[in-house]
Amino acid sequence: MNSEQLIKSLLKQGESEQLEFKQVVRKDAIGKSICAFLNHEGGQVLIGIADDKKVVGITDAEKWEKELTDYLNTSIIPEAPIMVSVESVGNKQILLVKVWAGSKQPYIFDGSIYFRRGQSTVKATSQQISDLIHNRQKTELHWERQLALGVELEDLDIHEIQKTIDRSINESKLDENKRNPIDFLTHFGLFQNGHFTNAAVVLFAKNPARFIPQTRVRVAFLEKGKTADEFVDDRILDGNLFKNISAVQDFFEKHLRTTRKFTEKDWERQDEYVVPMSALREGVMNALVHRDYSLSSASMSVIIYSDRIEVFNSGKSPLKAVELTKSHLSLPVNPDIAHMVFLRGYIEKIGRGTIKIMDACKAAGLKAPRWTTTDTSVKLAFPLNVNLGGAVDGAVDGATDDTLASKLDGAIDGAIDGATKSTKSKLSSLLRAIVDNEGKRIPDYKEITNLGSERTMERYVEQLREAGFIEFKGSAAQTGGYFITDKLKKIINQKSAD
Image 1 (cartoon, rainbow, N blue to C red):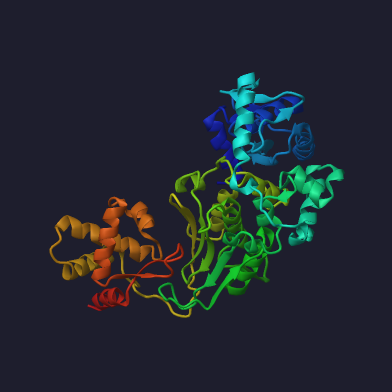
Image 2 (cartoon, helix red, strand yellow):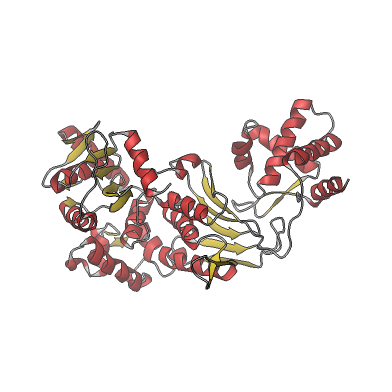
């Protein structure tokens, strides 16, 4: 979804509790609306739109973008991630201002607290202010704001903190008096009552796993094919969030092939990664920022298979998988972590990360990436157009959908006795889903096939395992999954030759 499609989609929605149109730049009116969105559920303001939804545009949009950013950053208290961007519709430019729901409510603009009521921005009532304060007290109990006992200043990476301070002062107009690391961390709630918070450890500790083991990230490269179980590069990253961003990018650069292209206008060869680095970086960034760090069993992994790249993280997504492919607003799972990442410039446009991933893959001619969400995890898979392994998995080479379905039906009939025709049909559907989506787990196949409850799916999977058609590979943790066996490949290939 490009910029123009996004704006047209918002115009079609019309004004609501989370969307407001303004024809001209009136900074005070915009400040009130943004303050109200921060105190409610987040929202967006489109500037350059008439009352009848006609796009009238803004002159000097780039100038207004900077001026409005500076104004909102200094006029709304406390600081919040506020994104102002220039968007194009036809030959006109408009401004889009977007915020998440604030994590430090109530927010104040021009001495008053504003709230959102339907399509209107109003001053908050005493009851609403009381509710906002109560909600803030509850959020202070959130895991990332709990104190990490035993962490001293020397345990933190001062260089990373200073880079964040410098960018905050230059880009977000942070007060120069906050240059001292302790003052800066205190200002943003990362240092409280003489202790650093869990968020501070995730973001800036030299070795965060020493204090919070679940911050580690697994990266692995499976070279010999998607059904092999030998990882030629399998390691654990134990740096802070910003160090891990760089480490994962280095891992991609080491193992991902590049494709070589000659453009019509440029005779020089251009080397491009098989998946755009911008899309991979965005996917990894989302996982690092939004993963559930609160559980000791929480995990995150980035695994390169021969036919796909998967980014997995623990935690329940607030949105369904299909909603992630559209423009959206959501409350960050870890607002303090998200705010620091925003200040560093890694989050450029709030709510557009997944859209950027989709657009980058489409522009590169790749299949659309796919999100799989469960109650405990989020997995992002990037299909590859080339095989990265040393061996090609030829299990279904040359088989059309119809012939493959016929082969799987025959395999089920020949190996599973005593099952009804309906059950055999479901087993065949599940087996096809595993052939097409190897490496997933039972909840994933339940979502893909919709064949029944998780208990029913477990029974079907066990029948396929007993028949020797599938096997589980990987650890018992979240990184393992089901794969088709050599026996089934042999059956498919043998039938293909008939």
